[in-house]
Image (tube, rainbow, N blue to C red; front, side, top):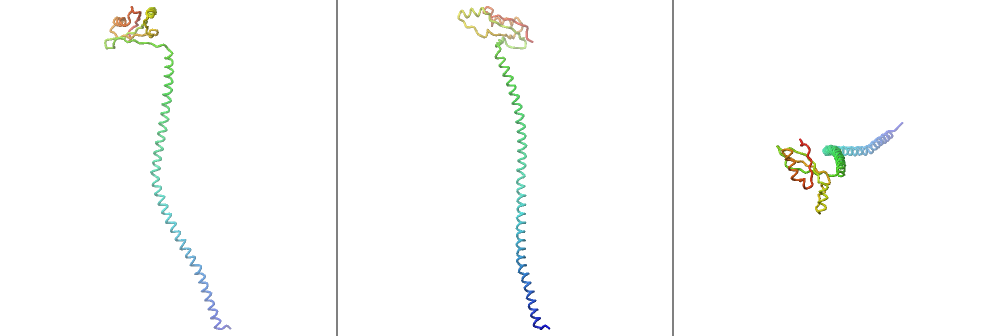
Length: 194
């Protein structure tokens, strides 16, 4: 048989065990609650900072949109300039080819002897144009040189005459006046120019 004291001793030690267990639970629960509170606080700070960053990102995106539009516009302008540059290169190449062709023609013409054109009279509604060839007689040139008179070197080459006159006779008179036969000149007329 147990004594009453023994039960009380057992009850007292049982309640001590329970109290000890409660204390142990509380000792481990308080740090756990504190840890949960700290974790909740950190989560709240993280969420708040995350929203601020998201809001900041939205602001950045909004500030980047005009830059993207500007970049797109500048890319289009660059593409247009490249296209215009290619067209200009094509025109430049064509111009250079044309210049080369003209230079070859000039070189060819330079190698040919010059032709001198003498225009007589003035064009008008009642005047026609007559073509002629003019020459300086080689004997007259030799006599002039022997006399010490200079002879124009143009007479070594072709000399053509374009006379504006009412008829062929008037054209011949003008040519005879400017290039007298007595001076050693000879003028040969062709048909009138239409």
